[in-house]
Amino acid sequence: MSQTPIQSDALAPLRVQIDSLDAQLLQLLNQRARVAEQVGEIKRAEGSPFFRPDRVAQVIQKITSANPGPLHNEHVAAIWREIMSACLALEAPQRVAVLGPQGTFCEQAAVEFFGSAANLIYCANFDEVFHATAAGTAQYGVVGMENSTEGVVARSLDLFLRSPVHVVGEVSLLVRHNLLRLANGLDGIEVVMAHPQALAQCQGWLTQHLPHAERRAVSSNAEGARLAATNPAWAGIASERAASQFGLHIVHHAIQDEAYNRTRFAVICLPQTLATPPASGRDCTSLVVSVPNRPGAVHDLLVPLKANGVSMTRFESRPAKSGQWEYYFYIDIEGHVSQPHVAAALNELQQLCAFYKVLGSYPVSE
Image (cartoon, rainbow, N blue to C red):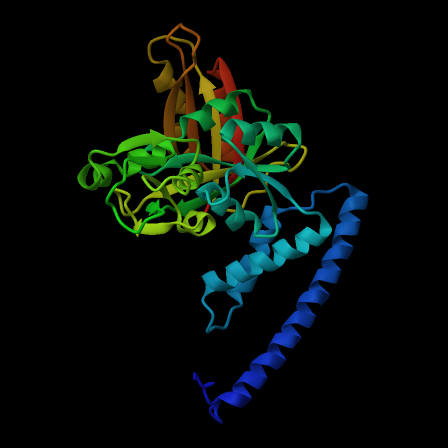
């Protein structure tokens, strides 16, 4: 017969103290929530946006700057983001479109940005995320933009061309891909399923350890995990979150070929939902342009940036699909559209372009 551990005399008063502090914390959190409800009523009457990522960042920065320890700042930031998310849900729950099903890295990025109280709407692909956000089904969307190993998510870039949404934030996730399966071993795996980018990011490991398994592309890593849960001969490449969601073994951790594998996600919305966030001091401006097909046209795009001291951090080309060998160029620059040197560079750049669209000006993810 098992016996209940005897509580030491030294531990008992500390537990009583923790219980008392927990009760005080709960009271204070509910006081904060009641004030947040009043803020929500004022915002509703004024018609102002309920979610302000710049305000969230300011509060977290203020709290972490005043943190005396021993809690680490990153843990304090995570706690306060959840507190603010829960309070915002009392004001007006935020509907956020993400790539589904449950367990995707896109879902994880949304939770990191909005907190776990957000109302997530799961979409089959990024096309649906853009459509749900543009149509108002969701107030915000989260889409993959680029990966440190495989580069840009081409479909997202193409969708920005014809969508009225803009970028108001970003999340950079350290992505660890895991091999998931019903059985806890590599024997008998016939098919490995994941998003095409995940398959590409793990191709070295798959070639070495599962050279004869079919690699099957699906709409998301979580979808691969869901399918793997239906057949013992199938495996998926996905997150630990997906393993828990679908009851799968993690057969092998971190099978990505590059240890430092990050994916950058964009937070999108209609301008009437949330206007361009104010400058934070560490911002990125994204735009897409095309130029007339003439000698030196691409070189000329860079001149206004250099002349105004603006640093370019990304330059990608995508076919215009016009049949005329024309291209769109996706550019990220350091700085905010409200800064004079950035505004001057963009004004000069626009004069050179046959097509010009600012996708967003937003704080850089930590």
